[in-house]
Amino acid sequence: MRSGRSWAWRNSVQRLCALALGALLMTGCATGPQANPADPLEPWNRGVYKFNDAVDRAVLKPVATAYQDNVPEMVRKGVGNFLGNLGDAWSTVNSVLQLKGQAAAESFTRFWVNTLMGLGGVLDVASEMEIPRHNEDFGQTLGHWGVGAGPYLVLPLLGPSTVRDTAALPADWKGNLLTQIEEVPVRNTLTATRVVHVRASLLKQEGLLEEAALDKYTFLRDAYLQHRRNLVYDGNPPEEPMIEEDYEAEPEPAK
Image 1: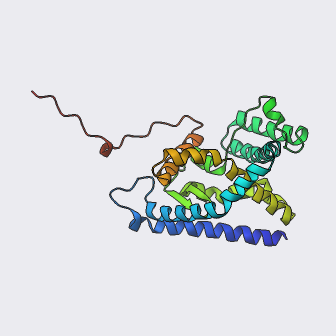
Image 2: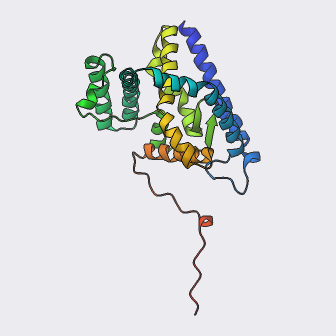
């Protein structure tokens, strides 16, 4: 069983790497004078975005809507707490890798308090004890040590990413405790539940997005890149250098 899981994991990693490499090879033919510097692969990304959006409208959104409408709020909250508790374990590892001692200690404490006292994480006892949550992943760890985000990428089914975050996916996959569950039906059920729960949590924001954004692709891209940048710098990113083309020099006063 483990060898089969290992083969499937390696196969997924190879596909993701091939996807990223193929996207990078297309950079030369996808760029243009109006291209966003952070999104040189925009034509290809927009195509993948349309595919993802079609899958979402046909499958994910209806299932997520049914989940939200039919599953009691208390149950949904417990599911969110359970998934968040699993995330605290991986956040602990990444905080250690980033040499963030306090964040690592708090994430470690959250995980064990909620696991032991919160019925395996279904109850968020740690938040009631005012222990803060730190969301850290391997992409943030790479960014913390100076690895640039690279071009923006939209991955099939997985959605917004960057070259750096795509390279971090294998580590994040292995660090997710759900992937360590031996029983395949249980693992698959929990993974599907996680996907549906996360999608359901975005339903309200989606309504605001439909009303506010003229171009959903551009809005989501810019929001994702800003969000990831803030995460890497713990909410205090350095000012980005001004691009000369973005402004016109003021005319010199007449003599």
